[in-house]
Length: 560
Image (cartoon, rainbow, N blue to C red; front, side, top):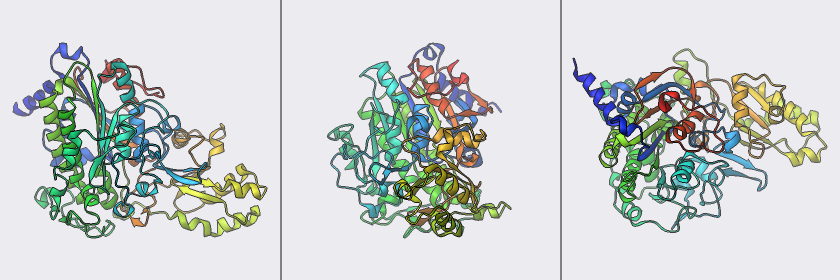
């Protein structure tokens, strides 16, 4: 009867060490972000987890089980940047994965930067990408310059000096860049090139260890193999629900196990790896190589390493969070995390490491899945709104013949300001009228003109507060659309997906926060906390200056 207690005690000791260790700064801050890890999923699928992955962190650290993003647009770059800066998107500027740039009259991808092309880039092959944000980028250049405040990584670098090593790693460029900040180095996986890359913002060539990893054959090792179930089918919650009709049937991949990766030279080979646990395994392996090659955590200067695992997001989009694929992916991520934590313990020492785990956003379930449980939901097609009777009537009423909408980059509507001005119309009046028409559509809960966010004329409920937290005068659109709970746009650049996040509803805002490290006593906290608290907590724990836009509260269970 004492074995479970002793095992848990062993986890605590591995992280907390002795009192002397707790009084000193850790050698490493390890910030782990699991893309699309909704707040309930670790508990929902915990029966398939071992003792050394998610459960090792939860038994040894503080688990905040009622943690939320407080901004409205819960997308990848928005959540990552909020976690790294402790600021709302209204302050850090990353309001969406895509926004419309009025200066260039084109959509803008959040971390694109033509001044800093990829090091040794072959070029982005749009045919080998399913992520619309990648195709929407007008240049393959990348940098963090669009983040308008400092990150916790920047503050560690300035506090510790040049000896501090700062890195971010992810499959997604925005996942790595947002966490590494302005003063670190970021590496991400190029699906078009099948290797980890960086841009000339960070360096002009690759260190030998990166080239060696890219040439090691680890990416090609999955060729002509399959993603198979880790365990016997009957052990899964969704074991009898492999073939759900709403799951995305990606060409050559299918919607039932096993999922075929195909040959290494296949058109979608490297993309398919990221649609499976293989993407996370490759990310962790690259991060382990980085730790060894860059001597992370090997002296008394605190280093910072961010690792963002992206496969949960890709799998969730294709199959939904309530699917056999999502369940098996998290079991395999638990294995990957266990192996990675064991490596950090061996090379750095978990008793010398502050580990922070969270997520950039959650995700909704597919409307058909919800319908099975008596919940009404649907998907929304924005493209048809321009031809709806209400929109046509509005244009006739306003005397506008050239069009009202210049661009829709979810969740923002950007009005055609030049056309509206040419017709002699008032922009605010047009925004108000169009908002009324949009709000009358099935599936639209609210359509709020941005000009009204600058006034006190709106009800200040939590949804409005979330929209205000997302509003940036230069980057946000003229109208913010909030879909009804459980409604979402299911089109990803022509690919119909099973789930798409980006709302202010709790299934998108609710994420885990787990913090373990020297001097942190294990506990489970149920009060509501917010993701803007994470950066403030790390800064207070280390004694650094807070990131310049941070306005969260340090979490007392960690900092006391």
